[in-house]
Image 1: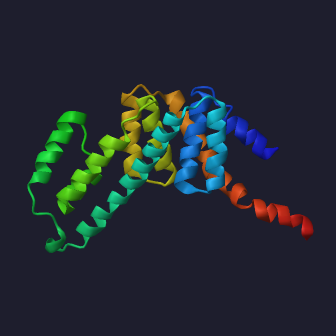
Image 2 (image 1 turned 120 degrees about the vertical axis):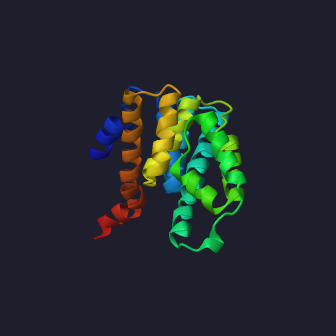
Image 3 (image 1 turned 180 degrees about the vertical axis):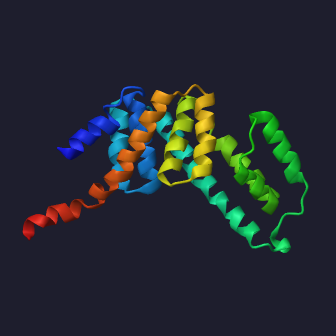
Length: 206
């Protein structure tokens, strides 16, 4: 009964985002955190609610982007070591950052730190971003909703701010944001039950 109520309150009972998108967000959070059985369940739900194969692939690419972006946090730990030989001497990074700010209006702190460490790493990240966040079928608003949900689930505050900003700029609103957070919370907590199914089944034997 508890699971049924949570499913209704925090997941498929939400009213501001289409059920297809709710299921896709749930699938993406499960893909990022496991278990894979959970991701498959939500994939099947998304298909039942009309998700196309291109929309599923778009979601997987947005999930991959959010996860890869989170690894750039390594730049701050390299800088904190204070070893000049580990830092970037290439001035091209500053040119790239100025161009990025002109295009998007924002340069995330993590990218500024990455530029301090490696121009090639910065270029690679921006190439990945341009490729992975270019959807074939999903509305761009929902691409950023997925990336935001994944960032929330892995506790990446910097990426949360970046993707939330883009979600709002692409037409997202407060009611939709509440739905995204609710689904992410449901999936995050639900791992305890999905991972514990074998334990629950075995309890009858004790």
